[in-house]
Length: 163
Image 1 (tube, helix red, strand yellow):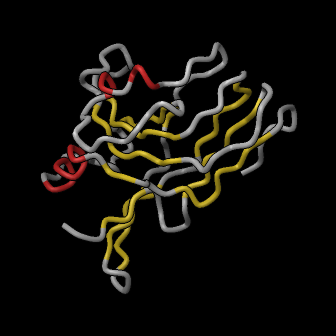
Image 2 (image 1 turned 135 degrees about the horizontal axis):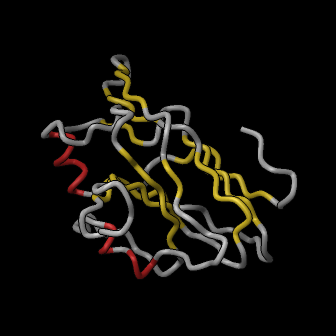
């Protein structure tokens, strides 16, 4: 993926879910996750360094207080979602197109949360279900105008290995 030349870039290559929320595991087990359904909306939000993953968090409302705050920040759609079977690796792989957050001001996010949106927009965070958390490595960058490229791991955003 090519980044805009206008701003400094931080590339989080080979990003894969550090943790999957319990609710997402339930959705997968009940055929309700619908990751590969292009008609469903999945989005990504960035969290600050005060966030700590907790598997019992279920909706965006549970993490709103940790979302980064910056006038140039906006949540991004997670598109190009696919599901594949890796028989030799004994796992199912959920992948997506890389996500880019452009020209962030002075905030430095410490992680990304992917969620499944309900209701057609972000006005009802209590309905939007958390899927996974990707923890970023410590970032020495400071300043403003950074573009954050989250390049998902070649094996996918999530690798389901046990059920």
